[in-house]
Length: 326
Image (cartoon, rainbow, N blue to C red; front, side, top):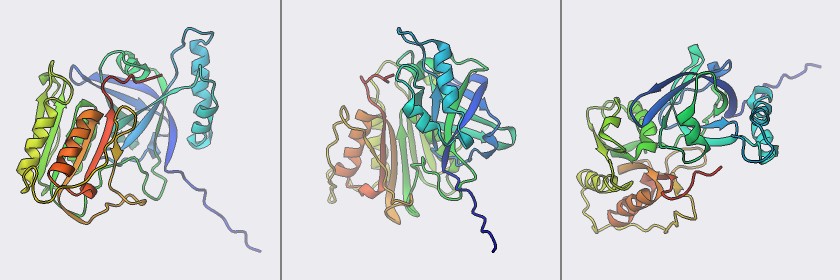
């Protein structure tokens, strides 16, 4: 009897053990951290706004834990075969040493060199991830949960999903969304038309990017103004340029209210296979950043200008006044 050989199932995401090899301050607020790891040859290069998770050893607290204990917990998490048992190990680790997990956007993947770049925002000591970003050193070891190129289907973690026929595109976000917007702009076809609006802390934080000639890119320095205060009116103005319907026009939309202090503001109009919910639209919008500002922009586009909800992706990456947590 012939024995059937069954190919092993490759999960879309896995944990990669990595170490820091380079650190470059791109601007006063943006830092690029380069990682290398033996398995990064199979780290999928999906571009756009591909989300990943950094898995960091917890900093010892005021209890009996030590740096060695925290490091050992991270080592245990990354020891699973093909990086697949990491979440179980994370969940089972004692609270005092459980590694910290935070979400970022991949900037570059170089499979041949087994390297990846992650661009992070430097915004002080607001929690373990921001603390680590500001104090990272070459040689630091950590984990990255990311897409496995050996997986045959979609990996997930990419929210940019415009309809096949979108007359115009609108991208907007604060500094936390800049890496994702840069990745999306670089992926657009040459004939794309639209606008991208990026709010950054300082004028010196403008970064080089690639965008089609038909996409207008606007950088807005917030300086000492509140988060979102320069982004919101600029995006509203951009929507007015891209849409024919004025505020309060003849096709208002309905949206549910979201309490951004109690709920996560996150809605991406795709089906279970990651495909857009509509094939054509006048405007496709991708909005990400501080949840309060993104909620205001969502209301403006859908409720006030009547943009189809199936054409608006909105993501509250963070909330003003809420701690990053442990």
